[in-house]
Amino acid sequence: KAGVTQTPRYLIKTRGQQVTLSCSPISGHRSVSWYQQTPGQGLQFLFEYFSETQRNKGNFPGRFSGRQFSNSRSEMNVSTLELGDSALYLCASSWGLAGGIEQFFGPGTRLTVL
Amino acid sequence: GESVGLHLPTLSVQEGDNSIINCAYSNSASDYFIWYKQESGKGPQFIIDIRSNMDKRQGQRVTVLLNKTVKHLSLQIAATQPGDSAVYFCAEAMNTGNQFYFGTGTSLTVIP
Image (cartoon, rainbow over all chains, first blue to last red):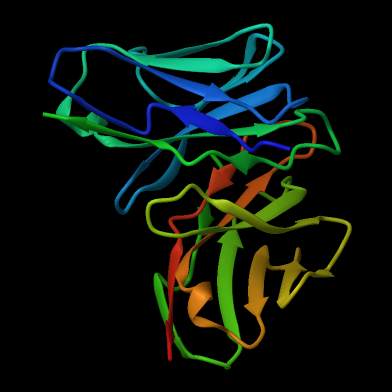
């Protein structure tokens, strides 16, 4: 069974631009969560989608948004990029239901904002 | 909000020794915990999980202990190998939801 995949693996953008990242979950998984990881900050939860609906949301500004498609693939978008948005963006998928919430991570997208 | 913290940011052990990585959590309502291993340039890799109705769970060379009284979680790695060198994260969640809270991580270095 294929794991979680993320594209692209690396991105370089400049301040003010916007970016879209993509995540394909493990087949059958309906929940996709997004995290931002920066040095010294650990993993910070962005949001979680389940069956095309945002079910949970972390404490990030509205510049960070996401969506999920009917095939459970998910995208996240960051608008008006700031230098501080440089990070590793990780997505994780799970069945999403009680008793099946083990999350499995993708390799991440490394975003650099110049 | 909930917080998950690690007692030691770095840990160095000799190859072959046992490693113990600790984690404190603050939300007594959390009932599901996971340990992840993250190697440089890779996403976190699921190691082992435990639910709040258990005190101990064993995997291959790893054991997770949960002490709900003091809200403490630990990961024990037996016969630590160089390939175990990585950053280890604990995470907590409530089994009814899917929002995980992660600690800042402990960097484990295995000395050959």
